[in-house]
Image (cartoon, rainbow, N blue to C red):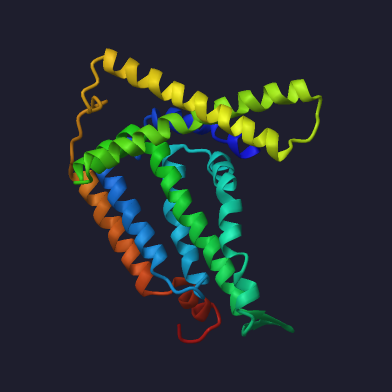
Length: 268
């Protein structure tokens, strides 16, 4: 249930997005394009390339600093998804045992290097996505997606998922709390889990019906109102071009290797 509990404060991303900073004032489309280019650049590296990914951390770090986003909040949200990534990467050290490099007397296999590479990519891409939402709001992200040509149905599904994921988590926590009070700390059996899951499904079904009726009553016609009109300006174009140039440069040149070569006194 701790994973479900972490969904509840997910709404604070929208509270952070209501702040006013140079990053918040950028057009959502500019931040969406920059984040998409960032993710493509990070994902394009080979499975054994770890050090070359390190400079990409400057992008989410700079946006957090300029936007006043607490680093601890982003890290806590990333930790909620970390178990899924560990599950995906857990077999790499087992399946790939061939030594790839040596660190002093210790030989490190390719599996451990690819394991670290997966964790690094996860931290960079998820961190950048969370910073995007924290400086844009999910409604702004969905509006930007739609304006960039994404299908309206897809943008609305993303908005609905964001709005009601933590509502469903709150229902699950309420059921868990009621069960704990009545069971006096007893362990949850598979049969009880199945009963609680079915109860949660029925509650979610009823909640979805009531929400749909309420939206129709308020005149929902399949299109969300725009919180504010989008206006693409010079600073948005400059931000996108600079980010694209920086990502391309970091993709072509291995900055840590170049700096290491210079510090060692040899050719990079």
